[in-house]
Image (cartoon, rainbow, N blue to C red; front, side, top):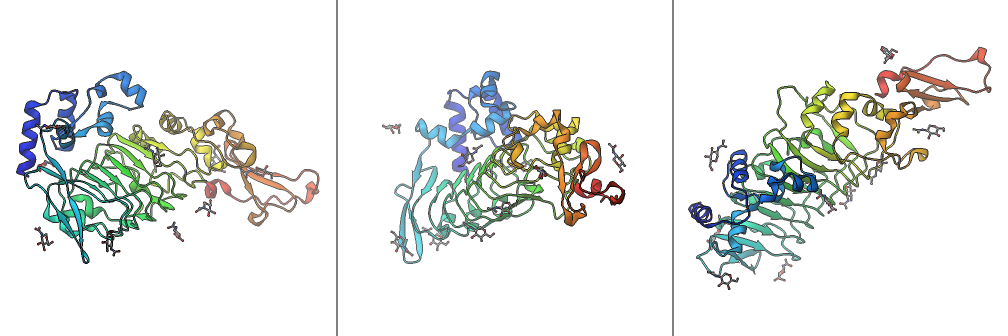
Length: 394
Ligand SMILES: *[C@@H]1O[C@H](CO)[C@@H](O)[C@H](O)[C@H]1NC(C)=O
Ligand SMILES: *[C@@H]1O[C@H](CO)[C@@H](O)[C@H](O)[C@H]1NC(C)=O
Ligand SMILES: *[C@@H]1O[C@H](CO)[C@@H](O)[C@H](O)[C@H]1NC(C)=O
Ligand SMILES: *[C@@H]1O[C@H](CO)[C@@H](O)[C@H](O)[C@H]1NC(C)=O
Ligand SMILES: *[C@@H]1O[C@H](CO)[C@@H](O)[C@H](O)[C@H]1NC(C)=O
Ligand SMILES: *[C@@H]1O[C@H](CO)[C@@H](O)[C@H](O)[C@H]1NC(C)=O
Ligand SMILES: *[C@@H]1O[C@H](CO)[C@@H](O)[C@H](O)[C@H]1NC(C)=O
Ligand SMILES: *[C@@H]1O[C@H](CO)[C@@H](O)[C@H](O)[C@H]1NC(C)=O
Ligand SMILES: *[C@@H]1O[C@H](CO)[C@@H](O)[C@H](O)[C@H]1NC(C)=O
């Protein structure tokens, strides 16, 4: 730790580059660390607009640089790589020069199956790139308390446990894309602490996500969590998490859910919104659900009809998602149904008690179930037993 402090002091005293002292200070207070440098651009509204940042701090979480990087560029701090040697089943990390402040461990496209336990001998490792190896288990990294970047794309990781990351308050970037992750532990992100700004889970095999992994309670800002190119089709809530008035979800960040398999619009009550007004608490989050398999049926009605809810979510810049089905609505932008809410219907099948040769559908905009039998049935014998869809479909 003392090495880190010396490095910090040196840079504070001698650096006069294009970083914003004011923002650095705010960043420092928000995340309880003083080693991040936020570019001056994040102060200007033009840049924020151009990059679609909600505010300066969001810009900082996406664009800040670590001191050791800033310093490395002006040769103040020494950052060195290891030589990675294979000794039977054990991987030895050899250092050439002991007089360095921080270490990088880089070994890509190899056959490493575990994070070498010898990393724990070097407490000042800040950067690990072991992309495209055969790593299944990452518990060994928990000892690296000042690790900043962990790149593990293209390995064989199947699950992630929050415990591994809880002591790592300097960890800002994790890339576990192209792995075999099928599930994230619930509350993995809800209780994430520290400075986890970038988390890449794209190209994994996740089919569901717990609602407690879509918002955060302990970290005021983040940049991106990338879930794109999975097979997500459901938001789950087995523990009945409830969004409550007194909870503070902070300013959030950008959650990329593009190229997944979501089809039915969410049942907000099931995922913990008993009061839709509480959606206002997520107003600075961006949930990008474009390029999914959306079915534009009656389930979308609450989304396009309720002024409060839709104005909260629709104002965000990334929600212009489009219908994929039914065919007559393919590529129609969902928010345009606001002018035609009658079109959002759910067909009712015969097995759900729609009479033979009739077309039945539930139409929430009119609060009605329509049974259209044209002239095929005699109206006198028309069975008027209409199923109660109002409650069951929405
Ligand atoms: C801030 O970090 C210091 C150590 O760097 C720690 O002692 C302190 O408890 C932290 N404060 C908070 C509020 O987390
Ligand atoms: C700074 O880095 C440059 C290029 O990497 C090198 O030539 C120079 O000797 C370094 N200066 C110091 C003081 O380390
Ligand atoms: C992994 O690769 C290294 C270097 O190519 C080699 O020395 C080692 O034997 C390999 N280990 C296994 C288990 O294949
Ligand atoms: C690194 O730690 C291992 C135990 O994890 C120990 O056996 C080994 O001697 C240490 N190596 C060095 C170079 O300190
Ligand atoms: C994805 O998960 C399913 C089961 O959940 C499994 O059958 C399939 O092999 C997995 N695919 C990959 C590429 O890991
Ligand atoms: C998420 O990952 C995909 C695939 O790597 C990439 O194309 C996309 O730009 C990423 N999204 C964000 C917001 O960085
Ligand atoms: C996508 O979701 C549909 C149900 O909506 C399911 O039948 C299909 O298997 C899913 N596709 C994948 C790749 O999981
Ligand atoms: C309902 O059924 C009609 C007639 O079969 C069809 O054109 C329409 O696409 C269906 N709508 C939905 C949402 O499935
Ligand atoms: C819809 O119908 C149900 C009973 O069938 C009724 O309780 C509810 O108030 C109606 N809603 C509207 C908006 O008319």
